[in-house]
Structures are given as C-alpha cells and as structure tokens.
Image (cartoon, rainbow, N blue to C red):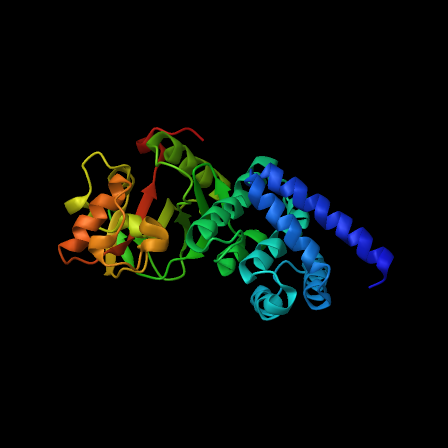
Amino acid sequence: MQNYETNVLKQEWMENLDLFTREMDYPREAAVSLSQSLEQVFKSPEALSILTDADLTYTNNIHMDYKKILNELKDVSPSCGVHTYTLHMLFFIILSRKTRKIYDERGIAPEIFRASMMDLHWKLLECKKMFGIWGTSVADWQIWWFEVKRFALGRFQYELVPFEDTYEKNGVSLHPGDLVINVHIPSCGPLRREEYMQSYAMAADFFRDSFEDRPVVFFCESWMLFPEHRLFLPKISNILGFMQDYDIYKEEYNNGDLWRIFYEDHKKPAQELPQDTGLQRAYRSWLMEGHQAGLGFGVFIYDKRLTGEKL
C-alpha cells in the first residue's frame, strides 16, 4: 500500500474510531487506549494487511469468514504488540462504518444500529473487568451483529433461530426447524419489567413477518432461567420476575456461567467468592451448601393481549 493510501486509510479509520467510541459511550481511558493501539497497527504490515483485506471483503460480503480473520489477528498479535482482544475490538469497529450503511439501506432505524453496536460497549467493560484489557474476549459472539442477524431492541437482544427441540403446551406446538426469536440479556443494568416487556413488543413487531399466522415465540437459553433460583434467590429478585414469563422445559447443571456473576473471581472456592451484591451473596450461599449452578431452556408464547403491551 502506498504512503498516500495508507495515510488516507489511517485518517478514515481514526475518525471512525473517534466517532464510534463517543457514540457508544466508551470510557475515555478505553478510547485513548484503542486509538494508541490503532496507531500501533499501522506500524505492523501483517496486522494492517489483515484488517485492510477484511475491510474490503466486508464491503462485498457481510458473511465472510470472520473466524479465519479473527484467528489471523490472534496469530499476529505478539509481533504487532497489540493484545488479541484489542485487535478484535478494532476489527469490529472498523467494520462498523459499513454496517451503519447497511442499516440505512435496509431502512432499519439509526436507534437500532446504536443499540446493537452498544453490545461492543458492554463486552468492552466485561473484558476490562475480567482481564484488565480494553477489547472483546468473545469475538465469535460479535459476528452476528455484523452479519446483521442480531438486533438490540430495547432492553434485550434478539435474532431468529430454528428451534432445536420438540415442545407442546397450551395448544402451541414447536418442532425442530420452526423459527423462534432467540433472546439475550446484556449486562447493562437491572431488569425492569416495564422495560423488557416493551422490548418484547418491539421484537414481536420487528420480526412479525416471520410468524404470519403463527404465535410469536420467544426462546431463551440462559443461566437466568435456572429453575433452582426459586429456592435461593430473594422473592423480590428481578430475575425471578423475568423467569415467570417462560415455561422452562429443560435445565442443565454446571458452573460454566459463574463468571457472569463473579467475573474474575469465578474460579475461586465458594467460601472465597465476593459478596458485593445480593446476587453474589445468594449464589455464594447456594454453592457453599454443595449445590451446582446451571441454566434453563425456556419458551415464552407472546400474546400482546395478555401482556397489555402496545406495539
């Protein structure tokens, strides 16, 4: 790449980075760190080549081989001098300026673009809390945002997925392959019922063409649907309120999601786990009694007439 082209590209990427970090409310320290890391990328021919090629490819194919690119960035991280998690964050921010155009071309509201891209903000904070690094440690999760398959609509995040089980209750039948709206709960504050019921209403409207005369079905696989919560969480817990909408038809027992509650301390013995929040205290007591954590699989048959929500 010629010096002139490199300088033009650098200016474009830097301006986009500044816009993105301001629009997505990145902490000032994170914005400065990412800017310094992008400067470092331009001193690494290997990293710059990977990101330049990916940027060009994304323009023509939003379903490109993301995992290959992410692995290539991981491989050049040591020689580049920028941590893998930071390179992955920069990669997605670089793509975001074209993602914004795709939203515009498809007539998707700018508010939905911002809400969707805010997921990088939440993952940035998680990465810093877990590893002390400004970046994203879950790059594979990010892919569907940039393939424009996953959307943040109010409090929750959603995408259409084929149901993988067989389910029948109250006159509703689901079979493998039937489309359902998959629900994700980002770590961005308390669960307020009014907010997430409005979010469900937004999602039901957004995906309405995929259901036609079928009931709108939400599906959630999450530690928040762990059925045993009813045994050890306080009765006023917002998590219990969230659970009440779902028919939890299956559960698994494991401690794989404890990091979401205890972050960098999640592998410590139960008696050494932090007790800074009510949720941490409840889980610590549960684990100290010899129990496991787990997750639940739930179905929520949405009916706005019953929820009282307006689309």
